[in-house]
Image (tube, rainbow, N blue to C red):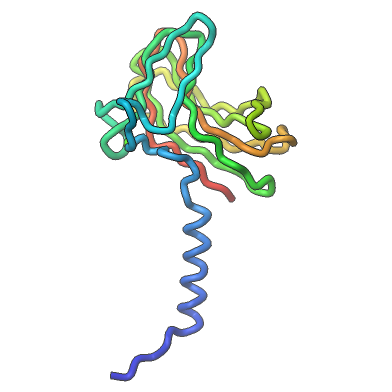
Length: 174
Ligand SMILES: [Ca+2]
């Protein structure tokens, strides 16, 4: 049987798909919270305000996506679970989407700005969630406000007497 070689049009179509796939690649390590280490979402760590406490866990209770989500339980002015840092291309804009629900207390997500390992004391928050319904949250990077930033990370934030759940964090660059 005579087979035609791939047409140029088809090759261009494949190239365009390659570019689209790259742009849509999720830059958050374990953003879907499916990977677990020591009973917690792997590659996520916590910090909290002075005098507060937070327990980080991997929960199978009503995840938004897949089989697991990130759980934060505790009491604090604020408690943060943060991702591995993402090196940035300053010519691009970074879009974070993620889901949160708060059984108690408050929950939101944010982008933090870093110069190497140094926190630039700047962040961009999403809307706040105070209900136990999965809510899609969106944050767009503001690199022009942080001219020294070389990295970002994404974080889940809970406050008050909280039991909050987070899932499906995705960062894409455009
Ligand atoms: Ca998940």
